[in-house]
Length: 234
Image (tube, rainbow, N blue to C red; front, side):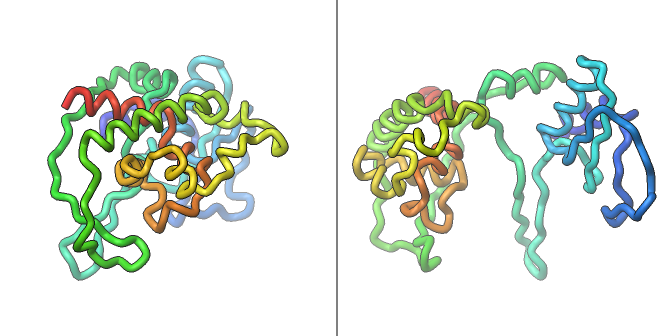
């Protein structure tokens, strides 16, 4: 990912980035006339800037307060400890244009090998370790994920890669507005829930009351299919 950031930065070197050391602009600081102003130099913003400028001959200004482009993961060091926490963009959905993003800059992608980690099961509401909890078996998890894949595939066209085909309020499928706890029980998805939470990060504060729509957006068809491929290779 660091290599990708460096390539993006070089590609946009001649673009003007409006940011002072404090990340603030003073009145009348600078005046520019451009076709498009892009707010934010994350993965989407930087790629949009490259496409607009280099492929569509459009003048742009990219506004980003941080010193690096690409939306890469940041690290927070917990004071008075040796613990660091990475946060931010750490993965991508294997959707066509997303892979084109890497191909454009000559970045190779590989399917990582599964790491065998020791699970620590925690009650998200109390923060206490669950002493008597037994995690679902691998077979049960995979079977539930296959059921989840069938469901996510049904709604893929209205949720991926964006919401421009999302129906009007009156036409939103009832399933999407159902609390996920009820939905998971109805479709026998409970064994897949720990995997969905860990991979997507959705529901760390409790997933049962989230709308199924929220979970589908975080762990949709493309991501589920990628997880199935990973499991098949392991």
